[in-house]
Image (cartoon, rainbow over all chains, first blue to last red; front, side, top):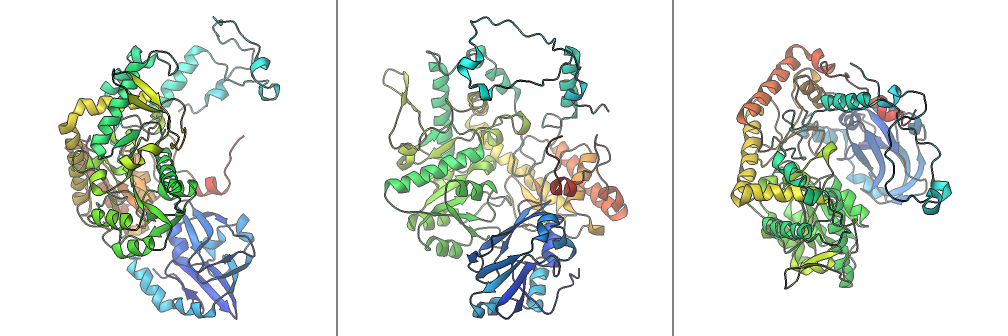
Length: 131
Length: 476
């Protein structure tokens, strides 16, 4: 299946994406992740100002099938969350890379960006998961 | 079908239900309960006896249980509960006693005897029968762990939980005040030893919670290595007994190196499960941890009398009286009826039945962890024609008059369909289940719409799970 992955963003093996602009990163979950989760019914967003390390759980995403965690793709401070998702979490299903963004972070260590995956590397991960 | 609930059948007139006259001197309610807590109205449905009888009979007709048909709900061990258990539990000497009455030595004796049997079955040294359910047992086990380290003045804040564990494991650890380190299982569905060792060396790790066989139905062949690594790094090993069924009489958690075990009497030891509960989650420990078991404890003194013992080191009281005694009694009846030989057959046949299904079903369905399983195995919806999902299959199974397996768990398999037949299903039933799943597979190919709109034969069709979760209607 083609998941309309974007060229201009970076990915993680745990299916987050980051769009980097200077030291600001916009974070969401990939089209593949939302497809796997199914209809998303609730997203618990973090508090602004929270500082978290790369890999720590930052938000909870609940679908009809399961509850998943959104992990910090890189370390940083939460500077904005997508408040619209509180009323319409289904935007993550319909527009995972645009309207369904989840949070904005101020990136702490820019060298961590090197650990993120390119579109090609991420495609390989999806393939290895068998879809 | 009449779908009115009993409240909707209620007459709007003064309550004429028969209430027996009190045979003791009544106290005024305000003397016993603060006025603010006394309700002014009690809106019980006001219906004649015949409507009450119909209400319950109709509900029971709608119900599906293990007495109705096969119930292959993975991770839950929905085995048949022999009726001898019910006969025993209804003996007036058991059913009409009160824990505060003066002479209940016989019932206390049962508690001690069952503890001894469970100790032998699991390879532990001491047991408490008090926890009311599996997750309650987990919490008790973790509090014991915590108290043990506190007593030694060692600070421990973390627990390792593999991603193949039961969902309650991380939840219980969190509730007991630990933070969780997740270890990802490898391609064989086992705990990678190098990751485990690395996690243990992070410092202040209290130990590991493990379900073995795990939620994939896979027995971790490195189990002795796992417990050795945890012990060498100063941790304790907790065994989630939810999957003990295939191990019965074959292999004991104590021999695998575990220090704390909880059992689910309502799974492994044939006591009522689900709506029929209540549950019971006894916890067993090695000798070193016995001082921390919940109080009150029972001991049998020299003249054979059973007395209550209190220990300052105990984690304290966790349940009123002695736990769910009626359930404990049923499990005792089950164990005595089967004996050692019978129990070991339970373990072996549950493994045989699961592998019979696994071997046949993998001819059509994708089996991501393809190896000999124990009591259960996990299929996925990968490769099913026409984008048919696990949910569609589960709903269609209902149309054939069978309860659906566990779906979308464990999370490590996409579109998981988790099947556990238990030892109490006959070969005929297993063959019928295979036939039905094959038929559904063919339908997915030829008539996918029938699956996407299933179920068709149930009193209520496919529910809108998304709408229900997004805008739940919690009360009128």
